Amino acid sequence: MGSQRGYGRRYGRSWRTRLQGRWRPQWRKRGYRSCEKRRVLYLLGKACKGDYTKTKSYRPISLLQTISKILESALTTRISYLVEEHRLLPRTYFGARKQRSSIDALTYVQERIYRAWRKGTTLSLVSFDVKGAYNNVAKQPELERLRRRRIPERMVAWIDSFCTSRRASITVNGQRSVEVELPHSGLPQGSTLSPILYLFF
Image 1: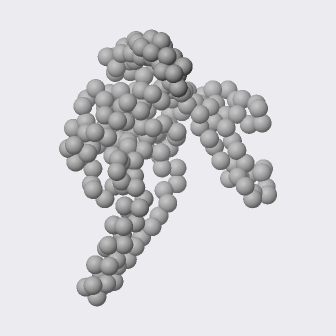
Image 2 (image 1 turned 90 degrees about the vertical axis):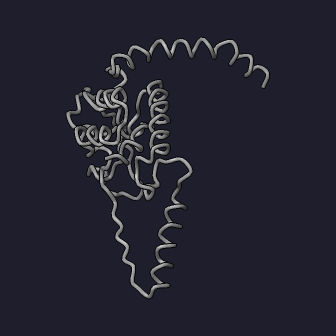
Image 3 (image 1 turned 180 degrees about the vertical axis):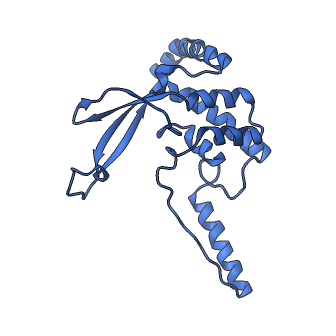
């Protein structure tokens, strides 16, 4: 433990200074470095799928730049604070929010059921699974909804850059494809920022 504290004292300030120097120009220019918009997709075979010649038998796993996730995590914290402080989202949105979990969502549904029973009425529940939720987020409506809820313009401009001109390559069996631009990439899978942005969409 002592050696870890010594390492933190010796290198912690240096790393913070280097990260601040890396990100301040991005924040001031409201832009995202192009090298941090790249991702690599690995195709992993799903279990119990006999025919691996079909694309449905594989699950794409997206790997993003690790260092960019630190900045995205900081921005996620800022947006989450604004959401809770100013009540920017409905209270029935439970995902990607602090002190809210799937247990809270189930408790909410359970209470609605009990309330219907007490009144002698019938309660209907509709459940659906959104396929490719993050990938199908349209950028312009997303930005408009952020502005409508008064998210600071500098954050909105940075998110605009974050969602624009993303590039990706695919790796299968150790072979990597040519990197291509994704014109309609939506929100990147694996980013800490994507869940909270999806709630606005």
